[in-house]
Image: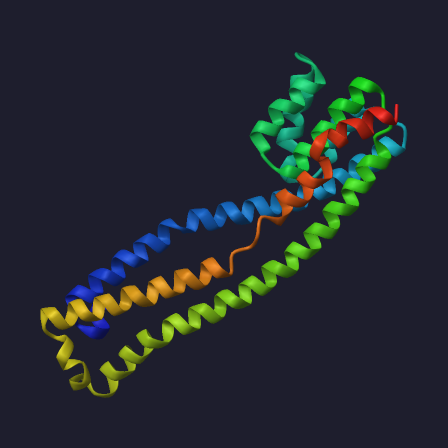
Length: 233
């Protein structure tokens, strides 16, 4: 910005904003990691249904998945398998819930723990949970695609005034002469701040609702998950 406009204060403001944007990349990486983790959990539930339907116990299914399950979840599954040799399966799954902190895994772990304790038939329940998770994941993928389009539009809208400044600087630098003073640079910095604020506001509007947590919590609210597992014994 300094090379293009030659204005010190707006350049410092843009640099500070760029630094803040760089720091926010970690949050973006976390969101993407959790999205991949959700997809892996859906695949995990599908494999659990297949293994349990084939007659394997919960412990046998977890041991098999710790070796051949979704790659992203294998370290956690291996920890659960090793931990269940020292404590109960229910405690090992409870500790894993604290580490993973995904609603789908919480419901799956609860079903496995209760089913292992009561001897209930887990396959129908996990199969229904798998179908619900697949439907929810499909909706969220569509929402993320539409969100990406909205973010692109917001980026274009926010970039237009800055691009206009660059064009004016190239075509006729005299157009920017009023901003050469300190007061003019402060005014330009304020305008850049308003552009960034508008961009952040558009991103806030485009944020995804926390539908996953609400939908999956509805699946297990009022203790019905435990009742359904124990009632199938």
